[in-house]
Picture 1 (cartoon, rainbow, N blue to C red):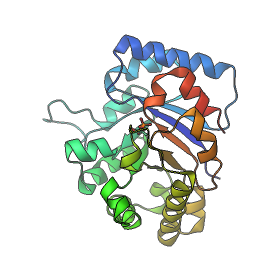
Picture 2 (cartoon, protein in one colour):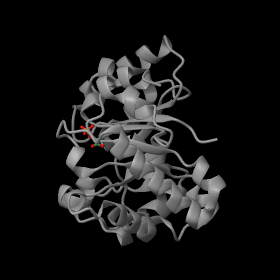
Picture 3 (cartoon, rainbow, N blue to C red):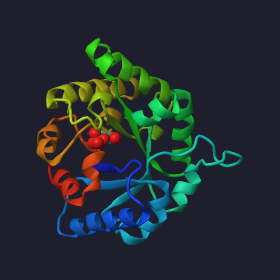
Picture 4 (cartoon, rainbow, N blue to C red):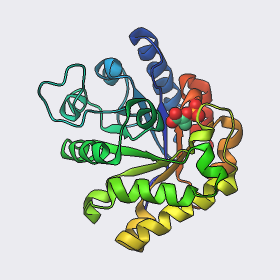
Length: 251
Ligand code: PEP
């Protein structure tokens, strides 16, 4: 059966020292609870090895926020999937809307990143989601369908089964504007039906689909109660251990 997952996306926040302190706080908070979900923190590249050294990775997964679309070589400033894996991280966020929007990440590029992540035993947390105009024009289902088809549906069922999806309506990211549980559930059910159409019901039922976009302790319970919402990808609220734990314990 699919897993519930709550994953933090720290984005470009915290110095190394602040990040290690935050990771230690989350790690400490997890000692007192048995969450009904897998818990993951995705940190800046610079923090990964140090964070890995201070957390109990049996209870707290570690991931990067991106990886390069090449394995190695003359790509100044890039960080490869093997490099990420060598820090001890086992997850990687791919296709976040900020990467698509500000760094021109296309489905073609994301296909390469997904392949390299899987080759290096990193679990991709693959983001999809429509912008506000697409929501308002009523074309959100088609937009998300195309994002998934173009970047993921070439994969074998076995490889697709290794991916966690995160539906993140771009208009809800960092805006304080959350999709209603009904809007999110409708999209998650749509995504699951697309997966069923391509890979069959069993693969669809086993795929974790997270919601992301201004998720907080106050709205997580209602979102996670929906049958097709299997957890959250958390931005702002992941930067405070108590808020993050408030979401983790919403299951
Ligand atoms: C995100 O960036 O993945 C995200 C969901 O951000 P926030 O929770 O801050 O909206």
